[in-house]
Image 1 (cartoon, rainbow, N blue to C red):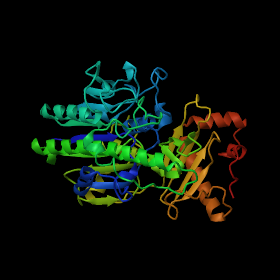
Image 2: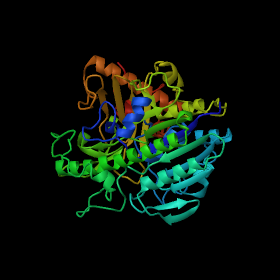
Image 3: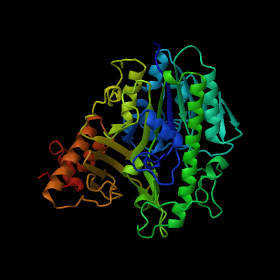
Length: 478
């Protein structure tokens, strides 16, 4: 039997609360729901960084954002020298080198210079946006190397391209990466009072939500701008529905072409999203959504890091299973190679886990914690330099720039991260906090995280293995 076809779908800024156990009561994603019933839903999938470019670089390469050099979102005309190119490992290139036809339709955001073009990273064909900015209707797109203003809604357009590619496929396995712009908020389109908006939205999507009174996640948060949260929530859910509606078109095509039993479908997001949660909106580079504050709130809350993830594959053992064990976007590199029957070459750095034993044999996923990074660019004077470690029970977030508070959450008893225990004097909590700090530091050391060198210089010396942390305000090990 020839290798499986793969359709890898990445939504942009899709929150973990649009589907699965924690879904918003007003969300409408019938296609994603049906995909989960026929496949597997991962309820605890985490991105390695809570912002688009670094998250996408980690997903594609299996490397940390400080290794790819993309620690924050890339800006047009500012970061021409940054991106993912020929010198960086990608699982897409591995598939192409082993006979797959490969195509990307949609958002790239991993470098706009020609040396970082998707075709340099393993894709045979590209139609979409090299940049991160875009609009929902009549977007400017690159089509076969030429920039044009396309006519239609962006989600429909890239799905059209994917459908055309699949219909014209040769007699070889294919990879289609379908990277939706939705449900990212529009760029350079605002409401009448200058606020951000998801409009214009297609009637097929907007009509389902325009008259609802949506639930607000933290209605008692002090000074929360509830009317703004509700307006944005309706628009956001309509944009999510555009992804779901076009996913249905892909599934119908696979059945029409009689290749649904030969195709693996993976749906995920680059990062999560907040809409009123913790008094903020957006993702890791979030903003307050308060009546008296719209300023920055960098964060690594679960709603920024956790991403909705569903996989449908013909060889799954228990269709409809919900897998609660934590997985990472790093897991896609070995998993996708495993689906294609490819053994990773020795030159490949593999940090994730192959999920095939989970899908085929219901094996448990064993890991002692996940490490995440987010460093805002230096031009942002209120920026942050965040590192986090998350286990099933605990989550520690450290800001090495001291811009936002260090945070510690007991996830078993406080899954919504409402009580910061970082300064607790409980011996048990202190021990847990310091064990997580050591995990963070050891991972940073293993990947040569640039923070270590900066802090070593700042402290003037390295007093033992982690002695310099005592000079940075961290608690002394008990």
